[in-house]
Length: 287
Image (cartoon, rainbow, N blue to C red; front, top):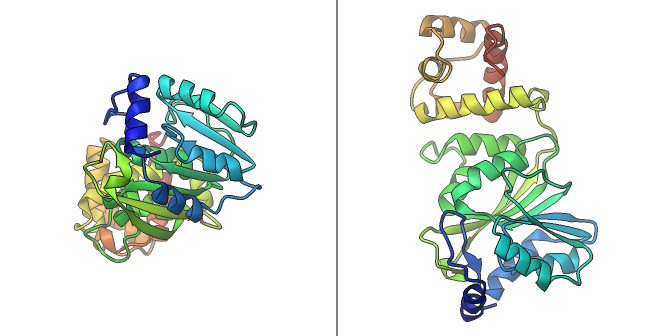
């Protein structure tokens, strides 16, 4: 489908694309082919597509995969897709919110993600034991953070969290003009593989949630020493009186240096979270 095709269909469906729903529809077949080729879909794959829109990727996925689940929040688009692809027995269109719905079992996600909720989608879909592969179109600024290597300016919560569960493999710039309406952000296609093993601490929901919370609490202070960042996290987020002296004592007993937050590795952050989870669990605040 080109721009005129998309505009005509949207007009018939009485749909005005909204930024809130991240509705930017793929209109370039070359970009579609780049995404499909990177996905390397096989007859063994069970695919999850988030926000299929008018089905620019959906048809190619259904032609090549064992099974495709396409979750679309807009009921009008969902009805359109069910009618358009009614002859595909291996395709299930789900009208729902990816952040609210239960997700069917799958081994690969191929999607142009809604840009306004990318972080929350990543957390729900990939931050878990045995996550799927991901072939995702996302905002370039987020992709740069995910692929950040030793550049503290790009280092953020999403850098550490994604790299905890996933291994970023490839990224490719995409033209904004491949989508309608033209988004006001630069776009990048990324490929993520699940890490072969994640720390057992991250398998349990409460512990994984604490880990992500501690990352969110200290990464805004990435230029501060770890003890200062942890003190701010404990006071502002957990509302506990655990002073810097006590934090330094905990770090020292566990052979963790008090360095700049940006200098620590993924495994360091997991270890730090384990230590403070054990300390704070006694106070009943890690639920």
